[in-house]
Image (cartoon, rainbow, N blue to C red; front, side):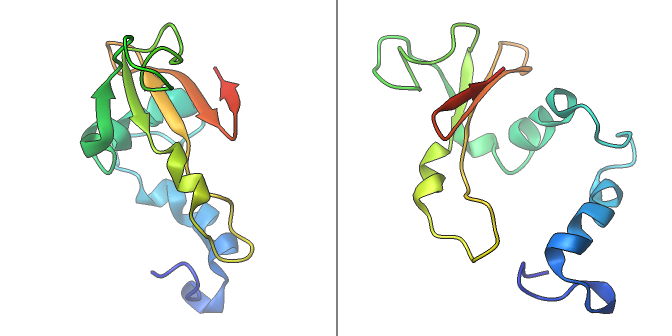
Length: 115
């Protein structure tokens, strides 16, 4: 469904999407209430897997020397914040950092680090 297309019954997508999201998850996952548990799944086994890189501490920037200390892998898509979005939609992009086991250790978005 295109994000500007109406949802079932003519509902607008921003209203409809949160009501159907739990049904879109695989059956083996309970309702998404704990983000660090679920975030690695689409990143490491889905849409983000081609963007995963090992942090190179000798390099400058978030993919290197400026990466969170606990980070081992990074998915650097913060550049997407510069992309245009339709009115009413949030900006895209954030940089995700994961430990050696693939668990989220930090997310950097808009210059703010969330741990």
